[in-house]
Structure formats: structure tokens, C-alpha cells
Length: 383
Image 1 (spheres, helix red, strand yellow):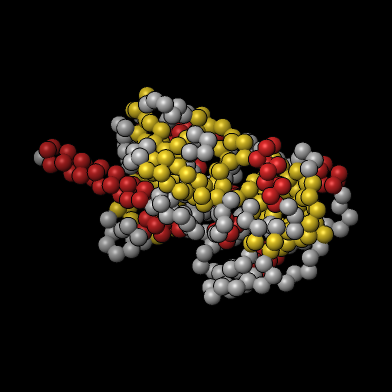
Image 2 (cartoon, rainbow, N blue to C red):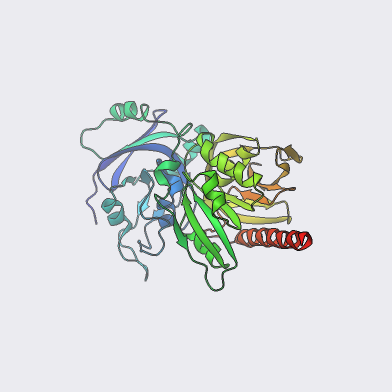
């Protein structure tokens, strides 16, 4: 167990909390956000969508099940900092390989523990997500830290996809018989996403976000997938161009989280920053296409600005809002009525749960299957 040192957390509006160091000793800055998940802290830490964010866990006890090598969603921890109330003194789980505290130290992630995370969460709910600094450096005062917090870059206008995307393409083979080939654009993809597709007989070609439209379409994939990712979607012009190219070629398209915002922009809708965002594994969403309510996993601070009360006409045909958050009526999904494309704002791969929305990968398969059948019919008629 790492020796605890005094630590300080200061928000950009001047609110401060005093606690103890957790993880690496040092100083870090980012956007303060809170996650309401009771489980899945390892998946949260390694989700690239949390790049440059300091995550406050609302669950009071964190680290009880330790850390293992199987549950990570990427090769590293991406959060800029970590805030917990009561860290586990000793991890206890048959899958645990080391403590969370040791993992944070090994990866240089600065955190703070022993503070009133309930009060901090209520403050962020009332005032909104904002910049924050965490320091366990000797002699740092609240005024010193506040000055540096206010000099840190904001999340609005942040172009972060280039920091998290893969440097080179790679393939996740289909499990069992191969049914489809999908090109997955890595905007910050989680490991479990191509796994969920592979389990359905999809060979997934994960490509960098820098791929050109010509190279993307040149893969000849049966479908194109746009992943989750960090930053402000208003900066992602290249990804929007890829989406527009996919729509123009009428290749079946599925986007999640950041990918939903990319599809929204490609269709001509704007995006905007939410007050404090949706982050956790307990968000209720209404699927308007089925009438069902699903409990879903979210991690987003931006949303698509599309009308939820009518069908919209776009360059690529009619589009409707297919999913809505029941907490605040935020757009949680889009569906084109005249083209093979849809998206959701949440994470249907849902590691570490829930799995209510896993059927969306099946919906993507149905879309590709329908497109292939239409293409075969058209070729048969031509002959």
C-alpha cells in the first residue's frame, strides 16, 4: 500500500477539497466529471473517451476487486486524474492480480482520496463540469493550484481523437464462420467493441481516424463503424467527412457515442456541450423503434442538437431521433429512414454492463444483410 500524503483538489470556480493522495504523487489537470457506476472502475479508467478528464467516482468504495489484465479496454489508463472517497485497503477477488492503487502508481495517474465525493458531485451537478487540478506536491496552496487550473485548456474546442487513435490498422477475426467485414474507425475505440462484433461473425478491420475516404471505401467492407472517443465533436471535421463519404456510398453505417455525434454533424445537425454529461452504467433510454426502455452505459459530455418531435429532411434523406434519455430528453440515437445508417449515444458493448443494448450489434448485422441481399437482387436483375 502506498503511503498517503496530503492532497488538494481545486475547481476552477475556487471550490476546494483537502484529502490524501491516491495513486501517483504529483499534479494533474483536466475536466472534472463524475461517474455513477457502482462497478466497472477498471473499464472506466482505460476508456479512451476519458482522455484529459479527472473522474470523480460517486460509489463510495473503489478498488475492492483490484485490477486484472483481462478487463482493460485499452493498453493504458486514460483518465487525467482519479477522485475516490474510500479506497480499498486490500483488494479481494479471485481475478485480482494487483491493487488499483499500485496500478495508478505504475501508470503515473495522480489521484485524491478521503474527500466528500457526494458534495463534489452535487457541486458539479449544480455548476456543471469544469476544469480542475489535483496536487499532492509539498507546499502547494489552493491559490497556486487555482491559478494553474484556470490556465489549463477547456474541453470545449478540444481535438483529442489524434491522441487516442491507433497508429496502424489491425484486424480482429470473426469468431466461427465469417458473415461480414466491417471497417471500424478508431476514434477512441474500446477493446470490447470489436469483440462483440466478432462474436457475431464479423471480421473487424480497425483503422486509424486519419484514414482517407478513398482508402476507407476501398476496403470494400460490408459496413462502417464509428467508435466512441474523447473531445469536442465540433472539431472532428475529418471524421465527419468520412461519415459523409460512407453515407454517399450507401454503405451500412453504425456509430456509437462520439460516432453518434459524427453522424449527426454529417447530417447537418449541430452539437452542444451538456452541463455535466452522462457518465455511468445506469442511464435510462427510450428506444422509440421498439418502445422499450433500456438501462445503458454512457460516457459523453456533448450531444446532438436534433429535433425529437419530428422527422428531419437532410441531404441523405429523412432522419429521426430513435432514442431519447428519460432523465433529460437528450438525443441518444439517430436513424435514417432512406439510407442504411443509425447510431446511438451510449455504449452497447457495455463492458462492464449492463447488456440491455447488445442487440444493436444484431441490428447492424441485419442492416448489412439487407444491403447485401439488395445488391445481389440488383445484379441478378441486371443479368
